[in-house]
Image (spheres, rainbow, N blue to C red):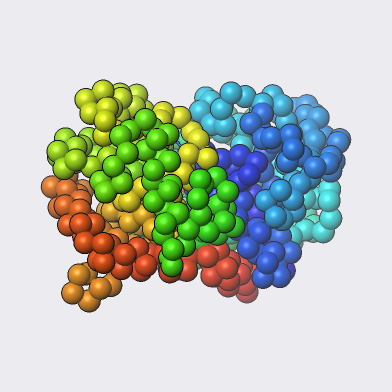
Length: 473
Ligand code: ADP
Ligand code: GLC
């Protein structure tokens, strides 16, 4: 089976969040189980030159908006599988990866160029695996072309939803300029008077998936459907949830070379070393018996930062350390700064994006806070499990699927989990975690339960293969 995975970001070429991790790891995992897969992703200004191994196509001339756009494609296998990177400087050589008024146009172009590239490099893949709203354009283009272009006749599409909250909305008056003037295309994009790339992808792809089993249910509800719940419900018989995996070549405390010391479940001495180094790195007093509560995230409402704001004072009172890595909305950045100013001997913050620090925090912390309002899958709770850092999460989306609440009587469970989006419920779990932390025996048990969980990509990749087979049948 030949599969082309198309994604707006993919590690190590680019990353703003979990989509990058997933799109980088899945093709490699597919290859490992014998699936012939290629990844297609943009070449951003941020993509390191060392990852551009060679030029694959230097005259990828794309018919675009009434003229010809002279794009190129680079080749690499830096993520462990064949990858083509579309180079279109005016669209992708910018200060940031997303956040421009014409993002819809940038990714419509990317999709169009990705399909042109596939045509150029060989026979059509059987499956084109599209990810999030950025790839809704290709779903429509393929559904239309398949009717009259024999090249695509046997190609089927899978559309994965990583986050329903971002829908790639734009003015319908732009549709014809992007080549979507037909009735079929206009209907596909049309969503309450606007054009929605997410809606188009959901409507015109052959099958749908999302990144956890629980989220597959949640997006059929008003709370998490963002106005498209009618469509996810309508297509529920074509929708499945596959929980993301972890790339243990990248996230493994035993081999991670970003860490000052390595460790595993049988020898956690290295974790203590990591804790010491982490406190030192944040210029905090070194008291290894006090727990570190960590958080690494985009600072948006999705991540439950409001709950963290509400419990921060109580958490400081307990004497614990708090370390936060992230950037995003100003009110949340200001909150972390003011907490740091208030308790400089207990709070460490780093505003920005820092891959190396993310690894060092996972390793050095004791607890990881993820009280998300919604969480399609979430990766950091799974990284935390492997690094012996106990997650405290809200029971939503992938957090609910991957974290089991610790039960002191049976000794089962790998973290702490609360239900309602309320600060008192979150705080209860924090106190429970502190109580368990005070007993090294109990704590080790929880760590062991987490560190021995197998969330490898291999399992998830096999489920994707089943999904591809189902899509083709
Ligand atoms: P989302 O995709 O919604 O942001 P996930 O938990 O799926 O959430 O994935 C987030 C990914 O981005 C993780 O790999 C996490 O370590 C990483 N990440 C988030 N913020 C930062 C940051 N400030 N610095 C480094 N890595 C970050
Ligand atoms: C999205 C979601 C996150 C998920 C990631 C990868 O960014 O917010 O929960 O883990 O995609 O699927």
